[in-house]
Image (cartoon, rainbow, N blue to C red; front, side, top):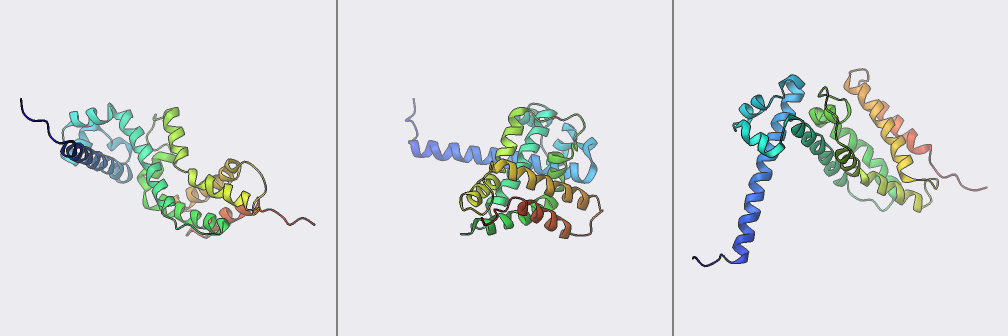
Length: 209
């Protein structure tokens, strides 16, 4: 029997193996996302994705289990990418200023990731319904908005209420404007800015007389 490898080497091997797995998984999701955005949902066959990615169909089944599993992975990846963009917004001492910066970051994420966005919010894959677990994880990815809203409420800048209530109102306003902009009915992001700012102003705490 050989001498067991030092724990440090075992750990390095495990990390390298995981890194390769994550890299390949990301590659497959990117290929599927590009196909969805450029060729539509009918292009999302396991065979087509494998061909574009240069791998076997069996590998895709091993990683995702099924086409539905791949769709759910895309759904969650889309929300994760949105989370990273929102988390990258520099923190501000004034929570209201921080909140105002999250809106443009959300719009940028939506417009720069059209494939993911269409799957997340526009049912781009007919018949795909995310599981309850996926829905819960997806909403949790946007918890930074709830946290910043809670900070605004604690600072007395917004009326005392559940942060989720404010977040849902802001989300609805953002999604409405984004849908119209993506469909070509709005020329730019000015309406998005107006409606999202109006949604926040609806919860502004008024000075007591």
